[in-house]
Length: 66
Figure 1 (cartoon, rainbow, N blue to C red):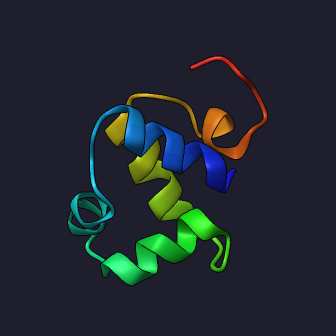
Figure 2: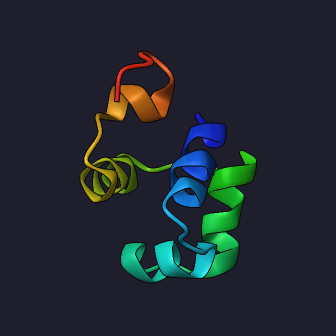
């Protein structure tokens, strides 16, 4: 799961700071999501899926279909 949010971010040339601003959290907090040091809350997962126009299932690794 955590690898996917990093890949999505990097593929679109966003920084962790960009995503942290969108999610209204600190860059460190967002970094912890990507590193798997912190679980991603449901509301953040939904915001990320909307931002990337993909499904939560894709982010969670339940499907490989974007």
